[in-house]
Amino acid sequence: MDADLIVVGGGAAGFFAAITAAGRGARVIILERGGQALAKVRISGGGRCNVTNACLDPAELIMRYPRGGVALRGPLTRFGPRETMGWFTTRGVVLKSEPDGRVFPRSDDAGEITGCLEEAAHRAGVQTRLRASVRAVTRAETGFTVELSNGDKLSSARVLLATGGAAHGHALAAALGHTIVPPVPSLFTFEVADTTLTALSGLSVPAARVRLTAPGQGRETGHEQTGPVLITHWGLSGPAILRLSAWAARALAEAGYRAELTLAWLSRLSPEAIEEALTARKRSAGAQHVVTQSPFGELPARLWRRLVIKAGILEAQTWAKLPRDRARALAAVLTGERLLITGKGPFKEEFVTAGGVDLDEVDFRTMESKRCPGLFLAGEILDIDGLTGGFNLQAAWTTGAIAGGLPRAPAQP
Ligand SMILES: Cc1cc2nc3c(=O)[nH]c(=O)nc-3n(C[C@H](O)[C@H](O)[C@H](O)COP(=O)(O)OP(=O)(O)OC[C@H]3O[C@@H](n4cnc5c(N)ncnc54)[C@H](O)[C@@H]3O)c2cc1C
Image 1 (spheres, rainbow, N blue to C red):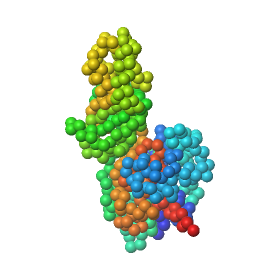
Image 2: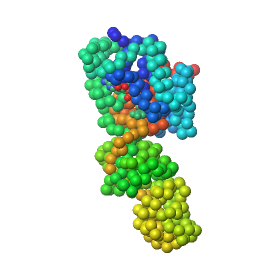
Image 3: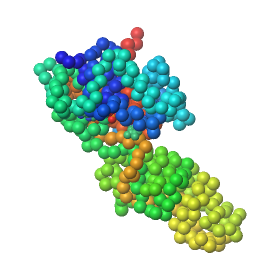
Image 4: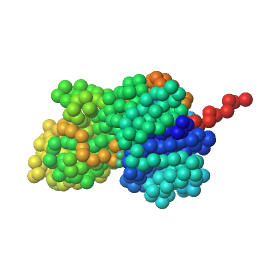
């Protein structure tokens, strides 16, 4: 046997599993097809690496996973954000939490996280082979045979697939008996074909409510989020949009990324409060033009102007003479502007794959396959994905640590 454990994929999950297993005395080899290990961690969080989240309660944490939260509950109790922070801190990485809960290295340098992992792997005696692309994994009489694309063959008692969202990794798992939930992207921005909107690129509102309806049918999809929304060159982005894209990832893929979005620009105000504010402005600023006199401080002036024009109000219209039906149209645009999503935006903040190995086929106490004994799975190859905020890397650390043989907590006396 060349190894006790071969880890296919030198990403976050693969490294964490390899270090944990080697720390328990196993001979471990990581096979990474790229010229560099941990490539995604290096670019994560815009180069700062949002390594985890300061949310420590597993019950609350699992709400941040559109897929896989329930399965992760037990694992997060054993190795959650607290353990992740402890792991890096005891190895010399100073971490900081931002007010929204995201945790980064204090240096804001993802290289410190990759350096720490590489150093820990080296110290634990993990062998890392780069440019080693795995072509096939087959069950042998004892253990597994792992074949590389250059024809080399290695044998190992156990194999861990930690190939991320790569299609070839899914094919390796399928060949060993696993069902693959079709992969679709999660955490993306929306393309909106409305030049009056995209002309305002760079403007944002702090608290909008966005709701998806099926295109043309007005049918509610049940997907709704509240939070900051950012206007971009191609449509909409910002935390509320990314969260909506994650929860509706599969529905949007099935609809070919065409859907109707209802956007309430001022989610903190009820429709009645908005109407009252408009009426009050009629009284207080009667001689002023509606387009230049917004009653709502949190709406940027150029966005207000666009919404006024969209409501069919002329530039010369004064507040005092604003007809009732136009005031109603303005309130309607403010509380529920309808926009057509025409596609997925080209850039993403934290792009992950929804879909992957079916979770029912994995024992989450060990991350061992229920289909193929001796095979383990960790990280994004599984049908697990989280929202932005450090939850995706946390899922990789958690499942990696458990796949690597994290000892179970001792039974309570
Ligand atoms: C731009 C960007 C920024 C992100 N920022 C954050 C963030 O700040 N916080 C956060 O929580 N999440 C972030 N994510 C998501 C996070 O990086 C991933 O969820 C996480 O890296 C998944 O880890 P993994 O080990 O499962 O997969 P990966 O990190 O994708 O690693 C899989 C590895 O397997 C290798 N591989 C694949 N197939 C084979 C094969 N056949 N043979 C050998 N090797 C193979 C790949 O080359 C790769 O190195 C970000 C993602 C992106 C794209």
